[in-house]
Image 1 (cartoon, rainbow, N blue to C red):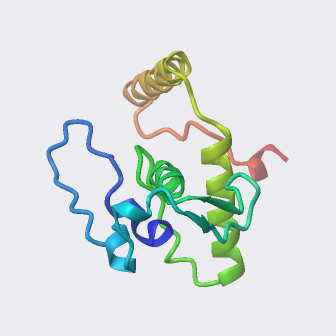
Image 2: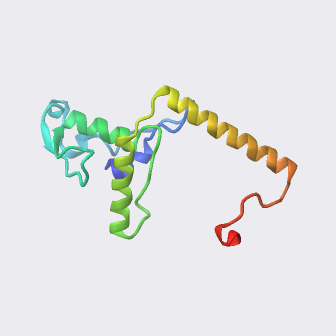
Image 3: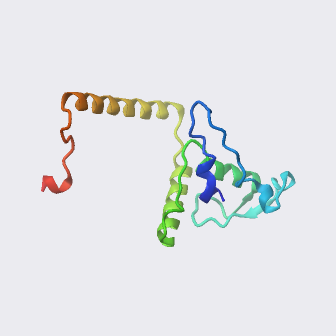
Length: 139
């Protein structure tokens, strides 16, 4: 359910103005309760970043981090099953293998802000001009 619906409850609103009811990603829907959080389950993972067996508490924490944290991804629109599964697996691996620290996040924000500032400047200085050449144009 997290892979299909996690983007609906992702923490994407920095001011927390929009409520995100978690109706679809609750363990109770599947007949599980808080008593099951310590129980070990088969994860069904197709990649090595999520172990084959884990406690329900750890499985839910990983799924929340991957699909419902400050980044959300939706793959349901991809009709080709092999492509959709590849995208899901790639997203899972990338999210689990690379967790940015506070300083790295600040550096990324600084770089994005600098790029945005340059884009705004170029837009005001060269209104309506194409700013990037396509690869075909270089050849």
